[in-house]
Image 1 (cartoon, rainbow, N blue to C red):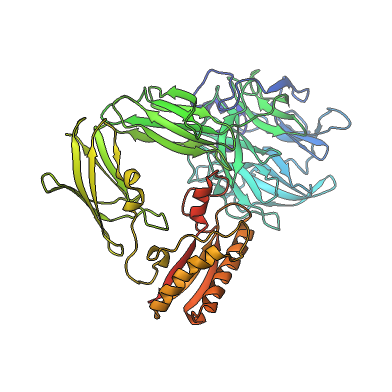
Image 2: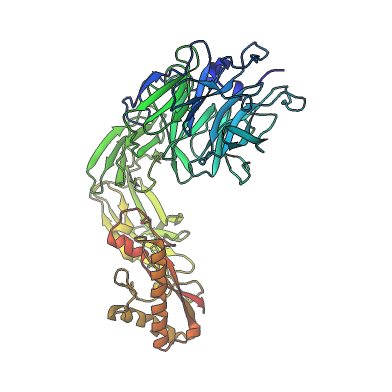
Length: 625
């Protein structure tokens, strides 16, 4: 029967090197972070040249670590004559004299790593199963499990196995999140990405845990992820050979953003080396411990972080180029809102590009290459703008291209599925007949068009529920630039609703303008009353319809206050209709606040006043006709 330490080995004495199959990078840089050393390190006097020592963990004035140094009257060994690991402790106030943690905390097999609850009343620790019949895996392996006990003084009592344990795979390396809600651990349980992954499980009142789930975010890989630890800002530190490493296992960190661990970044040299580096343990202030076998044996090192990490938002992506196997040479330019170029680079042989951007900013990014259509996209680093990505294909320039976009009047939403016919008046032939796409667009290359040519077109647009449109378009081609019909005609191509069907907004059928309430106010004024009178007149002419007033705000300000304000405005509007002779049975109102933003102007996004006004709208929806 063989002893199974987590994922072939709990430490490199059991050959972590056998697991080191991740990509190699001979560099001392900090990956996506700044490329200067952030730490000073030194070998801790805790370590012994003759023994394996690792996994330092500080709690309540004591430092715990794992070692195979002799401590019992009998020195336990496995079938390969390797000594088992036991838990040792150091009183930090009295000095660095290590002491065996005692037989109540250690057994015949491997112990550790461990962690304590924030109040210190409960401990979680890794331990081999005892190898009794029925407690080994189906292949005869003795796996690891996580155990918990109640801490009373210097004693651990009422020990029990966690429900996530299984004799057929290992779970270990526990750590508790700062809010005390989750136990995070490493396991090679089935269903992971490969090797060992990091998981989390909610902690229950009795100390046990609920169902385990893979740690959400970007931490886990097809390689091995081990030894999780939580920092003071809820970031996670872990060891991996699946992320890009200097060599063997390296220590990485990831930021916590809205329940996802993202922006995986190496902590860099000198903590990481060409050997295995693991069991990072952040302590008080900028100090802490980690473990490494850079000197040929597992040892504990202490560190002092002298330069804090500053994680800037990263814009990155990968481009392909239509009709070619090449991916390099696309010019990527980061611009401000006035299109001033701030940074630029060309894509590499794999089509990749990457920029560090400033936080809380909005940018335009332009992609261009001779012979291909240029692309400009908006991007923002406001709020959670980390890890921004744009992947797409550069499309070949097919000469002059005619395009249009159909937008619904008032709502400014795209009209999908409209039949668009474009007729050449010179030949009286239909040369475009197409349905508008989900963005309300159609595009058509004009391959035969050249400078000096003239166009005489009739554009016919039809869609059920909308008024049909017919527009004559005459144009002289002075340069080989694409032609955007909606930019030329503007409101002339906007689609207006037809009929009195339920769900129709009356503002699309009348000339009522937007109600311009004063900021933060629901008070009526003459201009608002004048616009509402148009709806009143329409309802008096159409006595069978009933409507619901839906009042919206933009995203600026507090969500709850916006909802309250929109309800007050809806109530004022309904009362005005009733005062003007509309029966209360035909009119109702509701406040929507900022629940239904119709453009990109959500929380944290910088927009013009005009763009915000698109959201601060009032709808008059027919509920019965």
